[in-house]
Length: 181
View (cartoon, helix red, strand yellow):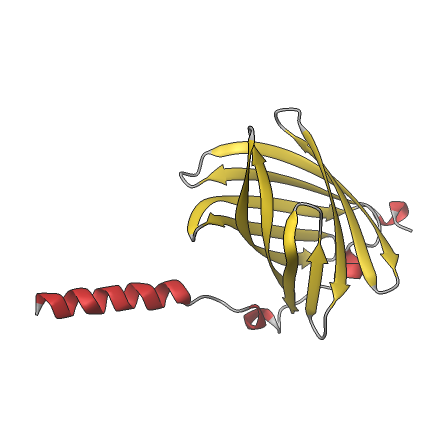
C-alpha cells in the first residue's frame, strides 16, 4: 500500500511538472501582439533578475532600436546594469509561419523559437551567460504579454539542467508617438 501511494505521488508530480499553459490559451486576448508594430521605433525596458530565493541580484535598463531588413526584424538591445556593466545583444528575428518566429543573436545557441497567440508571446532559447570568469549555458523560457499598444511585460524563467536558477522580469515601453518614425 505504501509503495503504491509513493508511486502515485511520484506519477502525479511528474505529470504536474509536464503540464502548463500553452500560448494558444491567450488567442482571444486583446490587444493582439504584432512584433514589428510594437518594435517600430525606440523602446525602453527596465528589469530585474531574482535568484531562486527571490533576492534581486541585478537591476537593468535596456535601450532598444529596431529596423526591418526584408521580412526580418532586427532588435539592437543595449543593456546598462546596476553594477555599471554594459552589454549589447542584437537579435535577428524571422517569421516562421502563422504566429511563429525564429531568432538568432551572438550569445544564443542555435535558434530561439517563438509562438504568438493573442496578446502573448512565448520565446524559448539557450543563452551563453557569462558569470565572473566562466560562461554557462542556460535555458530561457520567456512569456511576454502586451498590456496596451505601448506596454509589454516579460516574465522569464532561467534554468540549468531543469533546475530554476532565477526569474527575469522586464517592462517594455514604446517611445511616445512623436519619437516614432
